[in-house]
Image (cartoon, rainbow, N blue to C red):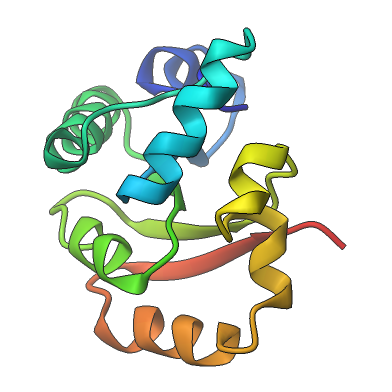
Length: 144
């Protein structure tokens, strides 16, 4: 739930017994950030931060959760290239990065993010690169 599932939201749910929480989706490159600005302009709630701030934003969210609860934290990430996801995977307390192949907002699909990722001819290479170079575990959220 973009624009909603941050540390504050996750910490409300953890006491109900959850041992893993996912925050995000976060936009990691210029293409996804630009698409997200269009989504926000039409009234949808989203997380959208400048590219140079996204690492520290996610790091702060992760640490807020980890300072209060012993849980696994995942971050849902949107990006047209593997590099920003790999960089975010280096966040010390981030357990999992989740490749977003799920969002169906037209603006994200148009730039090659979200569910359109599943149609990329280079998806296998994209995923292999993220998995091979990431410091955290990697998962993928897909829309079938």
